Length: 283
Ligand code: R5P
Image (tube, rainbow, N blue to C red; front, side, top):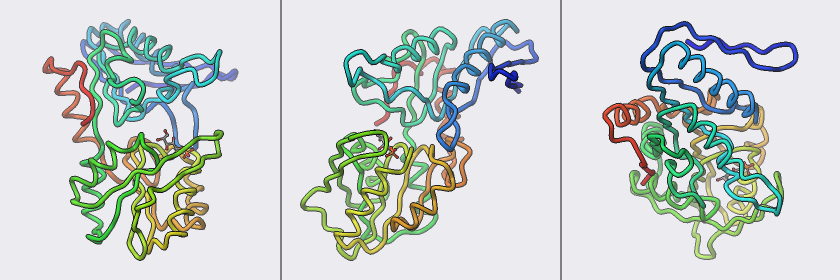
């Protein structure tokens, strides 16, 4: 168990009681409600240092949600590429990293973010598909990804469930402003639709997709996502936008986090411990 506390000025204190030879640090590097990636990152780095001081020779970070990956380029001149900076810090502290559907777009492989580290990117598709199957679904359901970056994810869930899928086009105009274009051929009139995305952050993307799907006559709109970053009280806004239910994995401690990742994460840790963890990417 890693004990953490905040000093009155907001600095983090971390303590571990060893000794340890091998340790797995399990912590998503953000909390629901869109906070607090900075604190979680510093705590993880301090925990690694304390564990090394307690004798740990091998340290694996299991961070189902890894923050700072979305800033994978300088979108405007002068911006820091946070993914690169944070990647280096984590790579210096840990020997292995496991994460779930990390934001890999311009950087293709998790191992490219963490130089010299055994890195495993787990796909949440089996966990999300099992949840949908367990709850029951209509065979006429169409799965829709809100942007081109969601293609592999929505395709993976659709393949498991044997459902039709499409991916929309999205242009981000600001933190809470997006323009989405559904494929012209999308035929969702009178059919149930499940939106599939990696992260629900402010929920803007989801609600804009729901607006367009309502216009196209979707019979019922739901959402499925890997990481529930949004504040739980956003659910009312989602329902008002016509989204009947939102289901996510338990990568963060969130009421929508109903698809358990434990089995998939354990397999990934076993891969690393067995020496075949490096450089794995999701399907
Ligand atoms: C973007 O690249 C991600 O896949 C999500 O679509 C995005 O992070 C969702 O953000 P928001 O909920 O704020 O629209």
